[in-house]
Length: 169
Image 1: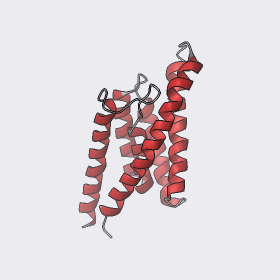
Image 2: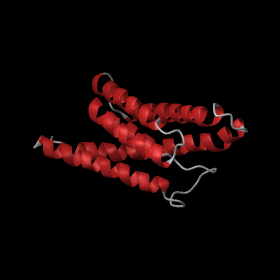
Image 3: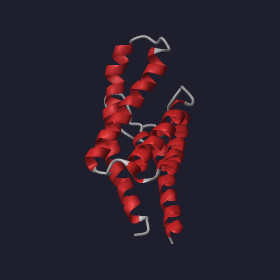
């Protein structure tokens, strides 16, 4: 009985990632705030990692990273590698050391979304030698971080609902 719920839950997560990818990459579907759209797959992978163990978290991080690299990034492999490793360690930390709460989830969403987006900005913009680094960061990256974080809070509640309702009690 437990396997059936696990399969349904993993299918629901996979469908969520696919729908978020479509939502994120469709032009003019999501409103742009200050010239940027959120990266919905980033907090989705992180919030799935709160509720699952490290191996499934790693695979959902890998899938989200691949989709982000295909749809958003010009550095192929950046999000694949970073999200795979991040989701593995988040799943491990929340399984063994931390309690899943709204406060812990909020801190982790802010921390990982901010660090991964700044790292991506550093690799794709600063180290690439493009001009107007501060202008691009202040007018696009900061709003993308905030927009992604707000969407991450909503995704936390969605994935909490999926986890609680699609498991054997």
